[in-house]
Amino acid sequence: MGGIIYWGLIRTAIIIPIIWGLSSYLDYSLWWSVSFLLIYGVILHPAIIQYNLFREHNKDIIEATLCSSCQYFDETAVLCTKLDEHPSREYLPCEGQSWEPKSKAEILE
Image (cartoon, rainbow, N blue to C red):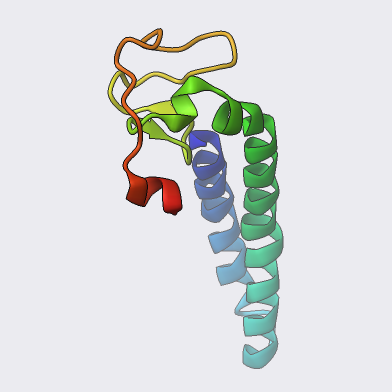
């Protein structure tokens, strides 16, 4: 998940000077349109694709492990927040020793 943010920041750092440079070559109203298209096409769309790939890659962990029903599991980062480790299909950070069920409110969400 951190890689998505990291590369988004790198793309942003690259695209901002390009957009700034285009402001002197394009009409103001056209510049805004081109800027929005560049921001979406270079920054947002690749980040959305990477996030969907991340979710697909970790779908089994999020849905079918003991960790996924624990209150310490953060499914947005696929992380055990108690031990600050990433579980996998073969590896449970606490080996089930620190497992605590989610509250009813968390389950209904």
